[in-house]
Length: 346
Image (cartoon, rainbow, N blue to C red; front, top):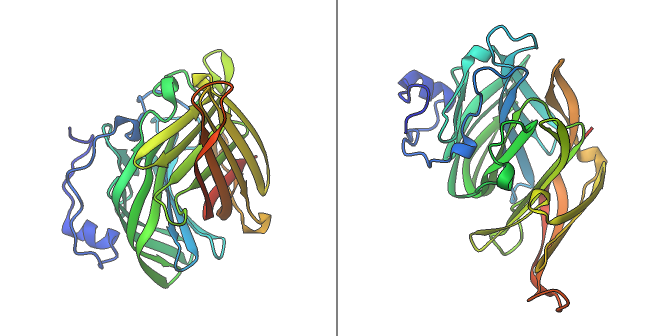
């Protein structure tokens, strides 16, 4: 399948996007995943669609986020319209945000391949770009290897057109290598932890939580969880998803699959539990509130700070199983990550 734009790139564009430092060509055999491709139907207004990338550099005690988003791309939209790239550094809580005309955004439909402006591109195997805000600048070029995604992240809600907002995890865990140049400081790394998810819809929920970690000591485990109250047609539903990647398989819990999920969250503290007849999971996460970004989020009035997020959270997860109701629970997995992404919408 071909993306909705030409896949050929000029040598000049490659040099700009890679800061002139990468000699490796962009991968041309991208893994097909329509969930992680563009969903804009050409008529929705308001509308947003964004891809969020997180990279944890454990040895440097550092983490970054990189976001590629389009807001209200319908020509002649009555709402503020733009595309943007947005990056942040956890150790300093500094961010760089650059806005572009929505016309400078394009994306594939059958797999992740997003472009904004002339220098920023994101795929499931490599993402690179540059953002400038005043005198501040951030550039990056990062490769993802051995990536695992979470198929049908939202279960039967996946692809439902009447859903106010949708979420999919395109890369639950991957080995990341590359470099980031943040405000003049270049940081190179190998064997870091990479993650990417993808939101789209009419508007963000009024409130939500998000938890993610893939830096568990001594294991290849990864977890992602998110939920909130969302409009679905003429009604509202509680949509909450938990996915724990173990040994290459995702153990999933979803309220929409009639699993029982309960959550409590406030700025700096999260508790989530999920259960069905034979499995249960518990998640406890925390962070210093002083370590949190207040991230910009699309609203009908434009971008507004609506998400408290830290990339320095601590997350503990325990998965248990039993043969059947009334039987004893046995621990399947228990782990702790000191590099969790934790977020609460406000």
